[in-house]
Length: 217
Image (cartoon, rainbow, N blue to C red; front, top):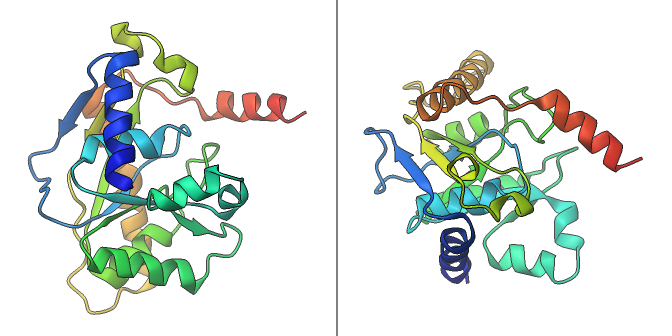
């Protein structure tokens, strides 16, 4: 089912938006399994990033409330997404992530937790430390809403860059200071990968917050 969804997404993107622009850092290897991290900017992030990394699989973590939506919840579960309670992440989600990583599937995490924050939370670093899998920063620059995809103009084109993998400390068990260092490395990697793709790009968090607040009045 995952393969069907991603092939469909790649085809739809090509038809409605034109040829996507994908860039890959030379240190990235499709033969390696990663904890994929990305800044969360849009509901389009998971499908677009999955399309960019195909044929590799990326099973994303998503807030558990989405899985309660009829039909949609069933579809995202079939697409490999893993539910997580963002208020109190439990062992079940971590256990499922570790199982999928061991099976050779990349796990995708948005370490900021939402589209309205730039603060890196420790979940991705913890998972990387437990699984001994390197972190892979990936950024998406493009339309933030589905309707924005229906344009073939260059300025509206989907763009994704896969950055340089982030190495883990050579330790059996990571301490709090190691996890904090990895969180800082993730934030810096997002900045570097964004700049490499487009040095003029800026995601306006305050504008996103204001739009969200207005929509939920």
